[in-house]
Length: 323
Image (cartoon, rainbow, N blue to C red; front, side):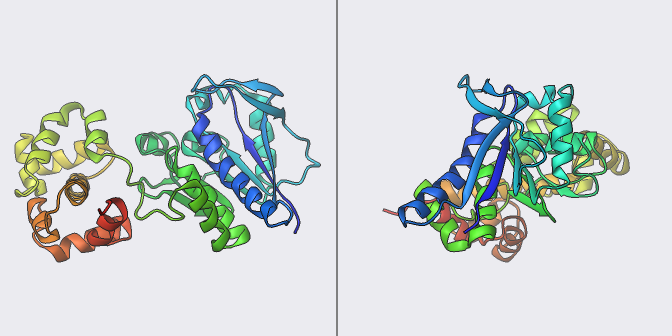
């Protein structure tokens, strides 16, 4: 078995989970193969602009090697995230290295806000991408040439991979591992790490209500009313009337400020409420559908399959414990 070289790119104030989650996936694969008496499939390197200790957002420094020369084979480059991405642009050495090697590496991936580093260098131009749910709108605004999607756990666009927030880097690494060495080994690693090999649904860890509150602005009262009246008529005309605006003006201003349409916001709030009731109560799916404004079980099921890739009943089984 030939070794695969994976380079994890970090910088000051990197999010330690963005690094350690994916790194541990590949390291666990090495450990499993080593226990079988087989060669370790991966050579793992953590690299930065300069060798030495790199500070993280968790106040735990990480030892990094210097950026390798062009002569080194690179199967995969994984760019971590963290608020240190704000300081990335002035680092000409790291940005130049990353841009040069992105063209020759077999795969390049970003975790969470690491997508902003790839975006700044034009690597994501014309491609589908995802980042942390709180940052999707910002990524789309700053880099309009990127087709930003806010729901997937991770996205593959040819040889470029991007992942959603923080722990989604583990999902991404498991997918890369599965592509390299097969689903069975990826499943063993997932079991060892006590995580889903492929979690159901999309970026389901985020809160739609919290997202709307964070960006509420002039629509904060409207959002509170929507959340408290999910079973009511929440048509665009009803929302516009509550906001004391014409329907056309309301849709235009809402989309500009919130980065989504009123109809999508309503559906996301209803889906989130349904997910909460599935996990926190024993209500039948039919009752949940009615309470959340879906009208009936069939509509709720269709919406769940579209957004999360699973049915309400399957979602409940995945995320609840039975005695």
